Structures are given as C-alpha cells and as structure tokens.
Image 1 (tube, helix red, strand yellow):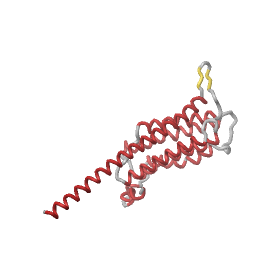
Image 2: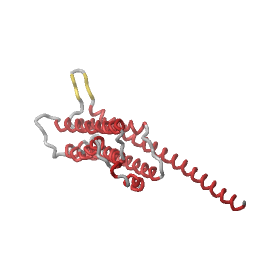
Image 3: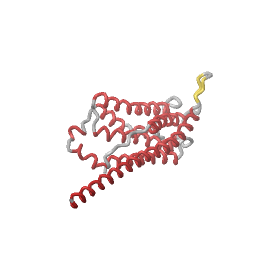
Image 4: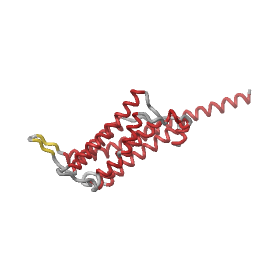
Length: 233
C-alpha cells in the first residue's frame, strides 16, 4: 500500500527524490541514530569529570531534536517539500525516539521500564500503520495537537532520563531542579499521552473511513439507480 502511494512520484525521480538542504539534514539525523545508541551504551568512553556521558548525550539528543524543526521550516520556507522528505522525516523522528527509549531501558531502568518502551513504540507503529492505510485510501490524517504535545514531552522526558542517570537533583545555591522527579513524571506522562493520542488518531482514521464508505455507497447506489432508469426508459 505504501509503495502504491509512492508510484506517481517514482515516475518523477528527479523531483520526488531530490536531495536538497532540508533532506540532507533529515538524512544526517538518521545517520546520527547509531551514534546516539553508542553514546547511551557502556562502551561510551568516560572522561575526566563526572557526568560527562550524560551531559554530552543530552546535548547531542537536543541538537538532533532541534534539527527536526529546522528541516521542516527550511522545506516550507524554500518550497522544497519533496516526496523523499515526506518519507524520511517521520522515519527519522521515529528512529530517534524509539532508539532512545530502547537504550534507556538498559541505561536508566529506574525511570524507563521495558513496558513503557513497548507502549511508546507500539503507539508509533499504530499511527504509522493508520497513516499508510489512509494514504492508500486517498486521504491523510493530520497531526493532532495531542500528538504534537506528546512529541515535546517525549523530548523533555528523554533528556531528563539521561541526566537522571548521573544526578537525581541539580542544586544551584537555593535553586533546586528535581531531575529524577521530572524524568519519572515526564516518562509516565508520555505513556498517558501516547495512549490518548493513539485513540485520537484511531478515532480520526475511523471517522474518515466511515465517511469514505458512506460516500462510496451513495455513489454506487446512484450509479445503480441511473442504470435501472436507463434500462426501463
């Protein structure tokens, strides 16, 4: 179904799969996923100061997350929205988020439990499947406000979970940042919002499918009635 939706673009490869600046940024984000996995593994070299791994990895993940907004902005402002970009951008986002949660199950099991990673990743599979079916049926499911909020909370929770591996609390004089509390609350909030957004996407999908089915039945009935009228006439 996915290949069927791409067939019109495959006939115009010079337009559909042109590697421009936004697409280059997206490809760089995909290429950076193995680096993120390495940085969240025990094989990452520890430096001379405590928490080096957590700080460097957090900054790297934040940079990758920012690049997601940058490539989308550049594609829209430059008029460089391509089929390649529409294919790779959501793929890069899902690879980044899912790989981070899978690695955090081992990196910080206190915050990210295996079932949490399953729920978050399962939601991504569900939404991807619904969008693929919708595309084959000739309509799209727009990202909801709940889904956009989920993305922001995911980024915050992942960064907090990484930092929580090194510090439970950051204290700057009288100012205290409860890193562990932010990580735990953020991750469980992501679980809740993932379930809610999955239901929201499924409801939007089902409503569009029902509308398309009703329209199709009306069109078929109108065709049958017109044929009967022509025959009896």
